[in-house]
Length: 331
Image (tube, helix red, strand yellow):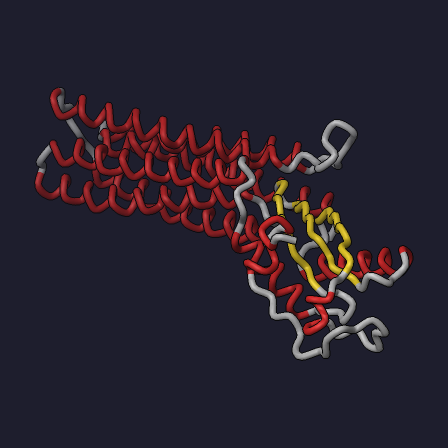
């Protein structure tokens, strides 16, 4: 599937989520207007974040789908990470506002009414949010979109908040104890801040190009399951994500007596294997190293007129073996 088609699909997914979020926000503010509950207000305020972040995400996906150019040789995929960062900040800010309002209502309580209708509206919105979040995460993982995954997790955390809010509102409805309303705001305001912080931690890791262990493990599987006798050793592997695209850099050890044409063909073979088994949206740079006497024991190239030691067993790759640099190997 081409990157343009994937970009269009992700934009359609996000547009559907934004449209639904607008309707849910209207329903939650209606519930607040009917009940005057600060607990319900927390849900409504978070919906503003959902909608705003949704539009930001939609714009970022549209921008990320643009092809690479002279100013952006690796494409525009990083904008998805920036979008998710903004969403994380907005979620944390909304949680802070909710906690402030909850504390204020402890000292200045207000009358609450029509909780039965409010409970039904919040419960329905929570169920829809869960389904939207599940859909967003599934599509985000399928198309390697951090923006969709972050948005989906936000929606699902909103569902968890809604479940707790409904339970609290039922207690308030049954007992009539007004401080329960403020307590709900404090609890779920804290939970919302935690969600925003977790999204920020993930986006900071992406922006600083922190090693992605899942991607490295997938690459380890690709290399281990698709060997070529002439690929004597693969090491110094690095993977950087740009939205749904990847940049891969590695060193490939080849027989020292191969000519440039043979080496070029083997590099292309490795690149094609990675594109087929790892991702078709990948830019690969391969540096070749000549083999040495120490490689003979796991080199399966035959016949080899320069072999110094007999072949014993193929190299068994580990994450350490795959990612070690020449300096770490002292080569």
